[in-house]
Length: 356
Ligand SMILES: NC(=O)c1ccc[n+]([C@@H]2O[C@H](COP(=O)([O-])OP(=O)(O)OC[C@H]3O[C@@H](n4cnc5c(N)ncnc54)[C@H](OP(=O)(O)O)[C@@H]3O)[C@@H](O)[C@H]2O)c1
Image (cartoon, rainbow, N blue to C red):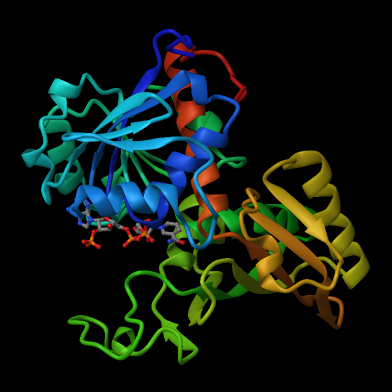
């Protein structure tokens, strides 16, 4: 660690929407919370709404701490948090906050030239809640459990990839190792997000996002295949994905259809996935054969849960499996893991580290 509990790592959250607020809560619930302090939040919304939505959350329940409001921000469990309302990185004096990392959760900045605006405005490092526009736009893209050990500690801009990439990559990795993955076709069934209207309304770049989120199953574009190839370049050209928004408020699923070079069956595929969940990715991947509905995984911190009751095979080389994941809480929990590992790398840049 680069800090002790007496000198916590200083964080600011830029964009305090679903993921920004989940990050704050996931950090609050993490075993490492004493090592970190959120000292600032930058979010265009007004302070009263920011305080209110910190205290009350329709999806994850009440905040398990004390939230007070001052003239300049919040006090969360006795710790002051400066709140600003800027819509550009330059409009915030990050340097004056003596920060270590900006947690970028607005989703508005994906190109290096845009992300460097935070650095030029005095933020030493940035952790993104979304993939960079291209791999080269960030210094590293991390799917925790897969490649966090590639962090050196010298990076200034790190992406935590996407919630779907975090869910799919561990499973594709173990299937490839066990059976030799030939092709994969992924269909994401994703809960609604704040980029959709509650009832029909205008959207200026995507006709489908003009449609009421709560009335329809809506296909949308996705960068998941690109995101997977970024992490697993050996699969380039062999992965395809589509995404469908469904009218649930949280928790999503991915149906993965895959073909393999070596023979597999429902039993052998499930055995490999169960073994990976229990031994290789504890806390990140889980499995269950209970008769689930998506809400069962609300506030579940895993990157994915394999529903082994839904694994199917057609012949010996074609199968599909179903993953559940809390697209908000699982992802925010991985942001905390990645942040903690990145900090550990800065303290011990030349040694292999674990996250605790
Ligand atoms: N939700 C998920 O399940 C999920 C999972 C993984 C990753 N992500 C990614 O995380 C990012 C945020 O998603 P979200 O669901 O949290 O969206 P969200 O709820 O809309 O939150 C984004 C927040 O950022 C604010 N904002 C907009 N422009 C800003 C700026 N220039 N500076 C500071 N704040 C600004 C927005 O304010 P306005 O509403 O006024 O614009 C909003 O409050 C996206 O890139 C998304 O793809 C989301």
